[in-house]
Image (cartoon, rainbow, N blue to C red):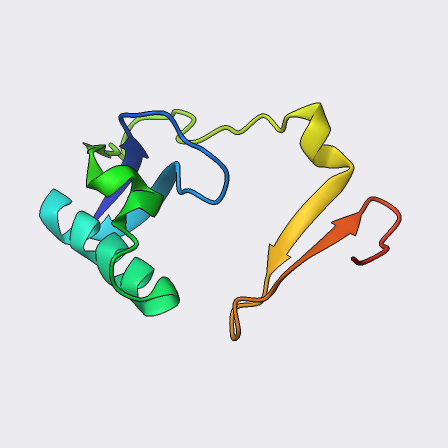
Length: 101
């Protein structure tokens, strides 16, 4: 098994995937796992959520010390967080104080 960093080549909008870290046998398997996961979560025809899989797949060398993924949160996103229920996919928002909407 190998570790892969998958990221989109185009711009990302709200409710779209930007990147993933995947353990798979090959680059092709990594992409197939993401496609299967997307279909299981959201049904068929949702490839746009991954930019129609126009992605770059890089194998991560585990013998080399490095940062694999580092994310900087936009200050606008800190006050209002969106959660998606993994069972029914209902979305709700929670502010920093913990109040739901």
